[in-house]
Image (cartoon, rainbow, N blue to C red; front, side, top):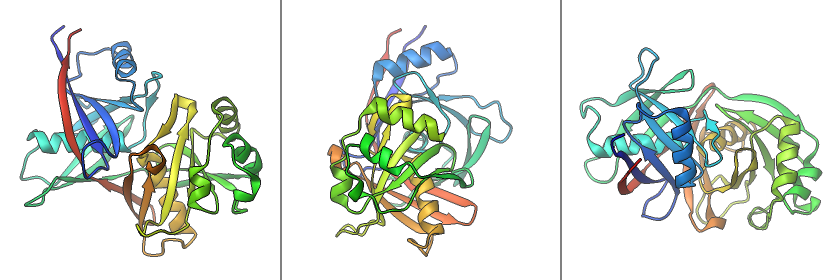
Length: 292
């Protein structure tokens, strides 16, 4: 097998070594599923994305993403934003086009690329329409699994929401409550399975000087992710929830994540009824090849 090219992209980042790091393998059509999983384990990042030819009509690229635990994820978050940042940065895209289409799983979703005269390309992608699946009254159990006292909760039930991946959204009173969470992975994984959710997005609408609408942390022991610094598949559901509940009346939501990990990330989500659009930029900070 010839050498396999890979790139390192910091997503939702303004400077290197911030945001959410993504390992990206391009020209991956020759790789088997088992090889993709093995490469994802080798990189040991929250997700590794592989660019392959799309079988679906109308798609420009198919994106396949695997966690270090070998689980294929089908949401459109930093795994997809990072791939399109590289595509725009590398010159692989037609400079005269602004709109493209990506296949993730069976879905074909639009992607827009902005190329300012100065600065980095910005990627906006549409997620699936929001689905508010159900609420959970087991917030006290989730608080305990997260190492938090019940008094840190706001009193509103947890809610499982999806814009491509089902996540439990759990509100606490303050940013200090978000920061002090220390999850017990086994206990949290069992609770998430019970409520039909993949990950837990712990958040507060407590404001700060950064003017973010929400401050959050994401835990996903279900697929082997202890904590993720920037999670587009959770930011979309949270933005839809905040707009629904009039916490972000204008439909534009800023979410600050990753602060507790030393990798602050700002995610921007626009919500207009059934349309949820996630946008972000980032930097390609490294490249290399795998000798397989």
